[in-house]
Every structure is written in structure tokens, then in C-alpha cells.
Length: 633
Image (cartoon, rainbow, N blue to C red):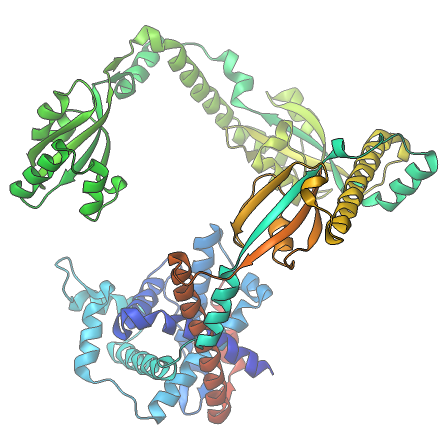
């Protein structure tokens, strides 16, 4: 069973590569695979080398599984996780997630297919191998051509000889050829695609009404004491307080010190000069530029615009572009070069040109005029003062990190820090839902979540330049407060739930009447009609179950959908089959066909890989695998 699971995981990874190759071509995919391998080997972790006599972690059939290959696969996974999360991962973390086993299974599966390719006589000649090598970006020089020195340097960092790398590349290419042969003819069964498209393309016509609090008879009074107590006990989880950490903290932020900052007039003027581009801005224009291949086509386009035969937007689309493709943003006269004078000659939005540019003749559309702005030092002084004071206060806080850390290391308590430094003492009953005060800082929330009683307080930084240290005094387990403490909330919840029940009961009674033949229009309701609703249609103000319920109904049927503050009465008026001429459905059909072809290809390749592994036989060297693991942190 373990072998089968490994095979399935291996096949999914391998077939995921394969299905993406169909349109791009086999050789391009191989290049990217090997390029990724090289880049990973040259990355932050460095190449992993193994000495001694251990060269493989096992065999599949007659083909060894190189120890370096497994090490690089682990390395690649750790780097990928780091890129996704922004955090460093250790091998023990990978093992905790079971990723080491998945990676091993993938490598074993790849080698199994390479062994099968070798047995089938699939091989790659020197000409194709050389072409593949020349296309790998990591082996190219500054001129974009294959560079022998870059090739040798990269392989040296990988800890591989040219012979080893080229043999592995041959095996990789042979494996992808085998994979392509297995899955190339797989197509999605037409009946599956037709069924799914017909299901997705169905539409519904519905008449519906909202039953709100104003539609129910009588008032919702107060519950009896017995009802209140029973409701409180039945919904105890609503009122149970989460685990709470009673935390004492000391903190210091720039705002606490800002009043102490003395104004340095010279520094303020230096800051103004550094920000001059912000305060002294020339006149600008919001401009779009549409470039043409030659002057004749540009002149013809301008003539059509002037004659009203075409709009500027249509002209852009005619050139195969979008407005965002030609948008230059807000630009100065100097930004536009030779075209600047003509563009800035406009006193209001409009079109100029054709104007000759380094890219060719172009039409410019001015969408807005931004006048020049000049804010003097005195006008900006208050803003500069705030920025200067905040920066200086942050510096003062930063200067205290080391002495405060020394005090903590010497045994000072948080209370003593508040007495001996500028830090202020505070207390908080913290839960993961806390957001007020210091709990508004992500750094504090993370530290509070991880802290336990007895932990040594450490100085940590806040994202506004502040610092803090905390101590967990007590952890209170989840607690259900007495009824008296939450009485008002329990009463409000009881009334809300009873009101919702009454609305749902009235809606259900109306639904029964409709199904017995009552005219929905004669029930005194404010009716709404929607025609041609799709399964993914969105209606504002209705519950999420509205559409899902509608598509589970039969024509003429009436149902009730409960919302937070109302009940909704639905009657299905008509069902419309999918429109075969709908262009959206045509695109959906193509996506479904590709998606299920990929899924079927994965299953076929998984079954094939499993059979190959079973026939060839797998032997793994636990000691060698452990040796690889020992090289990682």
C-alpha cells in the first residue's frame, strides 16, 4: 500500500508536468525542468555534497537513485516553501508534514520511468542533447550564447561532473518522451463534457419574496426565566469565553517620546530640500500614446478620428491593444521629449499628432491636465516637523533596545523597567480576538500567542518603531460566565432566534399554499422576478443558499431559504436548457475538456508508474537516506 501511495504521488507530480507540455512542446518543458534544477542548486542553501562511497539511496530495477538527486529535491522543496511563506523551513518541519516521504516517492517514480525508458530503448542523441544544453539559461554568457565557463562553474557548484549531468539530462529527456507517449492520446470523453456543460449551462426563472420581521404577527416579548435558562444552557458555546492569557507588558513607542524632540531648523530645511520633488512639481499631463508602424497609417487613423468614423478606444482595440497598454500615466513636458511641446500646447483634454517619437509616429491623447504645484518651506513646515519628530523619536526608541535588553538579562522585572526607563507598564487579558491597544500590533499578537508562563521576557520591535516586552502571569481556561453576566446578550439572542423561526414558519406556510395552487401574486407579498439565473449568479441581499436551493427545485415547486434577518420564499417558474450558442459555455467546454484530460492523464500515468515500480522492484538504503537528512538543518 505504501508503494502505491508513493506511486500515485509520483505520478501526479510527473503528469502535472506532462499535461502542461502539450502546447509548449516537449523540449521546452525539459529545459525549464533542468534550469530549475540548476538554479536551485546554485541557490541560498548551496549545493549539497556527499563524500565517501555512498552514491545512491537505492535502485529501481537496474537504475540507481543518485543521492545528490534526492538531496536537491529536498533542497528545492525547502526553497519553494520559503518563497511561498517567507519563512525558513527545516528538515524536521518537512518531515512533520510528511513532505520528505512525498519527495522521496516523486524521485523514485521519476527514476522508475527513466529505468523503463532505458529498457524500452528510448534514448537521446548527442545533437539533441547539445541543443538542450545550449538552451539552458544558467549556461549562457552575457551574449546569450552557451558559455563553457558558465557551464563548468554551475556544475561545480552542483557537485557534478559534465558526464554525470549530461547522463542525467539524457535520462530526463527520455523519461519525458515516455510520459508523452503514454498520455498524448488521452482525451476527455465527449459524454462527460456534454453532461457537465449541460449541467453548468442550465438557467432558472424564479419569483421570490422576502419575509421580514414586519411580516410576522405579534411582538417578540421577553422569555420566561425557564426559557432563558434553557436557551443559555443549549447555546453555552456562544457565551463561553476563550482561553485567556493575563499578560503584563512594558512598551515604548515613538509617540510617547515625540514631545521631547527639539526642533532643528537646519535639519527641517535639509528635509525640505530632500523632498523638493514632492513640494515643487511642474505641470503634468495624463497621457496615452498610440504608436503606428509608419506615418501614413498614423495620418489615416487621425483622419478617421477627425471624421468621427472611429473612437480612440476602438482605434486602440483595432491595433490589438488595451488602454492600459498605452497609458503613460502623469508625465512632464521633459518626459515626452520631442512630443512634449505639442502635447503641452493643449489647454484642455484632447488628441494631438501624429507626432514623431523614437518608437515611430504616434497619436497622443491627453485625458487630464495637472497644474504645477509649488509648496514653500513655511507651508510644508508642519508636515516636515511631524516627519522629523517621528524619525527622531524612533531613533531614541531604537537606542534604548540594548540597555533595556541588558536590564532584562540582569534580572529586572517589567515593573522595574517602567520605573527605570521610559517604558510604560500595561496589563491585558489577551485572547486571539483582542484588537485594542497594544493588541492592535501584529508583533504583539504573535508574541502573546507563543508566550507561556515562566518564559523570559525579551525586547521585541513593533512595526511603528516601538518596542515591548511581555510576561504571561496566568492562563485562564475557557470559561462559561454565569447567566447573570450575559443575561442581556442571551435575551437578545433568544428574541432573534424566535423572530427568525416565526419568519421561516410564515414563509413555509405560504410555500405550502402555493404548492396547493394559491396564486403567489394574491398573497399580499412584494414579489421580485429573476430570469435566466445561472448556478454562479449573484443576487444582492439574499442568503448564500438562495441559488443552490433554486437549482435543486422542480418547476412550480416553492421552498424557503432562511437568512440572518429574513426568510425568503422561492417559486421556480421555469428551467432553461444550456444554450449551445453561448460563447461563455464554449469557453467553459474547453476548460472542462482540458481539466479532465489532465486528470485522466494523471490517473493513467499513476497506474503505469505503479506497474513499472512493481515490475522493476524498488530497493532503498535507509542509511543513505539518513545521510542525506543529516546534511540539512
